[in-house]
Amino acid sequence: MANIKFGIVAPAGEEPKRLLDFIKRAEDSGFDSFWAGDHMVFTSKPRAFDVLSTIGAAGTITKKIFMGSISDSHKLHPAVFAQRLATLDHLTDGRFILGLGLGEAMNLDPYGIKWNKPLSRMVESVKLIRKLWESREPFDFDGEFFQFRNAFLDARPVKGNVPIYIAAHRPRSLRVAAELGDGWITLPQPPFLFAKKRKQVEEWRKSSGGSGVSPIRSGIKREGFQGTAWDLDNFDKCQYLFTSIAKDKDAAFRAVEHLRHILIWSELYEEAYGIKLPEEYRDSSYLNVLITDEIGKQKLRELGKLFSKEAVFDFTLCGSAKDCIKRIEEYIEAGANHFLFHNFSADPEWSYKVLTEEVIPYFR
Image (cartoon, rainbow, N blue to C red; front, side, top):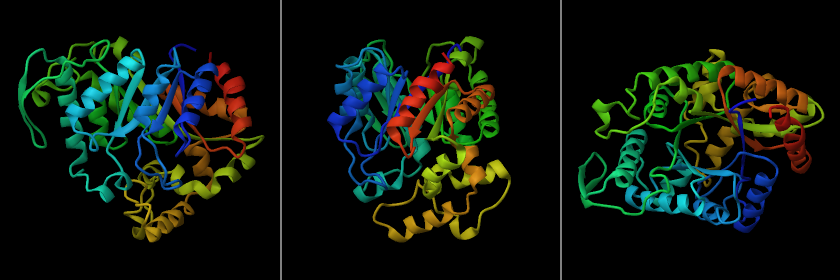
């Protein structure tokens, strides 16, 4: 099946050298991509190492697999970020992908990192990163968040650009993904909801004027084929999927039943089923929780108990190999062309083999 890619997501909090082994195995197993969350901490495991450094090291021991981080634009100044990304691009021979989301409180608030207006900050940061790679002369920039004077960076990516995939599920961020991104990553959701959002992303991309961002708003002209049939076919539309594989659907569900608060985001649940959750849970989300906030974490777990067994099947890749193949086919029909599997199976080793020896080969 043409142009369908499969990626594997790193386990949370993995030690760097073990993660290198994980990445090399992923390449040898036939995965097209590897992904890792760029966290300071995780709710499940407080320990988190710098994934960008680990990916740089992995670039020297791999040859084919693409490697991406799902990061935010707040922890690093755009000039430092541009230099680091260019370095990663050289270490990986052009195989690094930057995924950018809005950020999470757990990775920012305890350290005093500003992330007010997170979407606007991200857009401005991306513009500056690309401007630093593109400009052959020093330039000035006066933005809402950053000011540059005679700025110049001679460290450039191998082919002039590092692909930037925007993580998005809300209307404003979906539009940014369409107009600014080289690809789009979205949270777990049923195929019918993915299809709705994919259609909107493609419509906005078609109308963005072939410039990467609408020229009126961006101030930065990007060359490309944006909005053409070729572009839309090659624009990665990535579905992130929590995965639980077992002999049958009931066993797969039992492995993740206690994680429903992580598997499903409340606003997507409401959008998918057209219902409203109790007001007391309005501000409970993975985006806002801090690892030291025991009350907030407990409330998030309580919210998860409201999500039905069928909702878990709708939002995840959960069941036997046959069940997973059928669900992936539904996502492909909905327009997804790149899958990011985060394996939460009860037996990680057995399920990994099912993915690599039964599920993925079916689509090759």
